Image 1 (tube, rainbow, N blue to C red):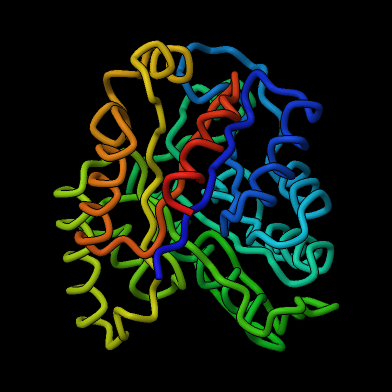
Image 2 (cartoon, helix red, strand yellow):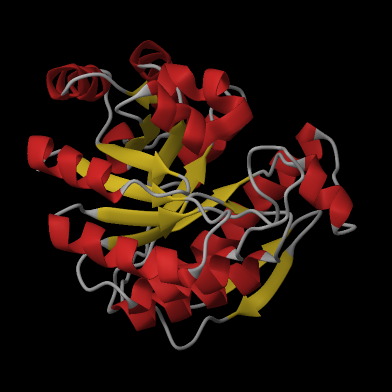
Amino acid sequence: MTVFGVHTGLQHVTFDDLVPLWKRIDELGYGWVSVWDHFYAADLTGDARCVEAVSAHAALACHTSRVRCGCLVYSIGYRHPAVLAKAITTIDLLSGGRADIGLGAGWSQLEYDAYGIAFPTVKVRLDQLEEGAACVRGLLHDEATTFEGTYFSLQDARNEPRPLQPQLPVWIGGGGEKRTLRIAARFADGWNIPFVDPATFAHKSGVLVRHCEDVGRDPAAIRRAVNVGLAWTEESLRSQFGNIADLVRPGVLTGSEQEVLDRIGQYTDAGADQVNLALRAPFDVEAVERFAAALL
């Protein structure tokens, strides 16, 4: 069964905006709510009005009762993987066992530069993601973890108290075919990619399957999700995404209810187990309600 979720951006918002939205999504029957991990707005304008992800993830857990609570995705360059594992374990306890963690290599050099965080080459960031994913998975799934890498190391590291979930899901975000999808094949319980059309999703999913076969992993063990925009009108698209509206357009649901339903069908035919509506402020709650009435 396809899960429908909502991915809530954290730019230009207060918790007076977020909490009622999260509660309404929970009430409407969606199965997932997630946040992102940015220090600056993700529209590349240099606007710094953006709340922090770990604290928002915890607030999401505390203000919902049914949905899975995720982050798509934490940048491995911003926090040590052990810090992330401890944080997500606490969020799992707060949520009653509903937490998921997503990891990515990071991409917004604007944020790294602003806060004095080293922004290495793509190869190094992917190396860090691979090591970080191994560390996080070990800390969340095993009683003790020893790991020796170039960037991270753990020595008989324990993560106690344990998460409520014995296998708290680890997601990998991104579409890089040589490294990112191979990292997902090795370490992920879920894989997520944003704003691609169904044909691109199908292609990337096929690459993931081949990597799974190469590393001896059952492809069915990895949940596959796409983040899509929802803009019933062109005005809504421009309002939400501003100067990147045309960039994300291939992955935006728009038109009539039937057109949206047909597009969802194309994603599920392409292998999507989960479709998340990626919303940005100003949040259009009526659009989320309209979608729920049509699909849920």
